[in-house]
Length: 138
Image (tube, rainbow, N blue to C red; front, top):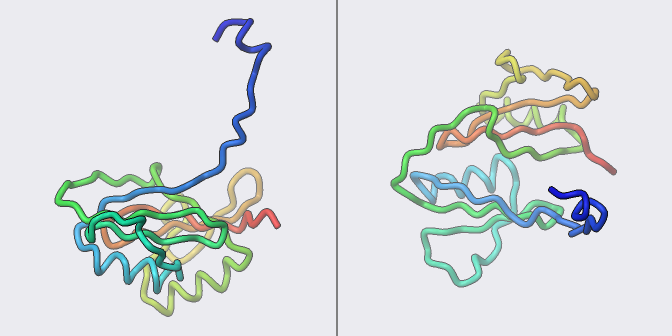
């Protein structure tokens, strides 16, 4: 970037709109996102039936798309969401028999990032990693 461009820095006020993921079984994944994360299903904007949309409480959307493509999933590539009640969410995962772990991979527990935020990780039915942390920003 040239020094002239740095002087004219423009703020675009970006906000997250949505994430899109590909899944092997749309019905199974849709039920998972509704019941494990409690996401609200919303109309998919008139798209074909192999695409379903869900919404988080901040209006950010998750677009779930059925596909035959194989995706390689690693923990370093993940969706991260936060809650003001991480302990209760961990209990919900345990009651739902959903394995979760901390960043190093220790089952059933959290770890704290260097900034003090506690976090856990788990995988959806297609192996996508999801981080839930207690950085509720309220």
